[in-house]
Image (cartoon, rainbow, N blue to C red; front, side, top):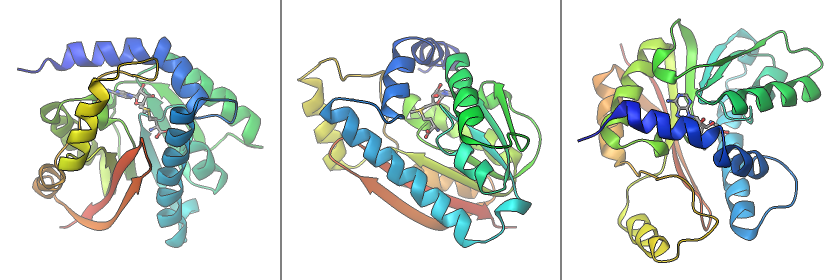
Length: 230
Ligand code: SAM
């Protein structure tokens, strides 16, 4: 049985404490250990893939984008720089404060970028595109499916998600990792079956348009772009 409130409270506390320090460093450019460096490189590839998709459509200045679980703004800041109107939110106040500071440093004009501290399932409004990268890994599949349904209800045209896919190889690697607990260990990480995620997207009125997979030694992220099918 799952308890969404407990899971959210654990994740929120983590990203306001040790998780904040760990991920702020991974999503930065200072010294990190080898595993963290590998995750930094993999995560940047995921960000670059999504930005590449959006830029190739050549309409970023016309788009309203909701970045749900924005972290330190790794996606929101470059998208705002490219002219999109961004609503970025995260359950962790510390992450949002860091994102705001980075935006103030990196953007000449922050007028198109709004931040909020909010659970993604409490978000309201309508956006051309809703994006949620590397957040579903923190929740069991049943809860992730509820999140996809809610995020879908906010998306007028498109929902872009990334998640750790549940494949045989990754399940084995995860098991091996459990034999070597160490300082690089984070919160619980949940993998999701791609066919389950796609079925949920279909049920909520979306069809898959573009896909990608980022794989490094320690970072695995399947990226799906789903567009409204009706
Ligand atoms: N999406 C960002 C990126 O790719 O750079 C951050 C990814 S980080 C691994 C996961 C983020 O999801 C954290 O900042 C965490 O606080 C946020 N998060 C977790 N659960 C959330 C929820 N229920 N609502 C909003 N944000 C959430």
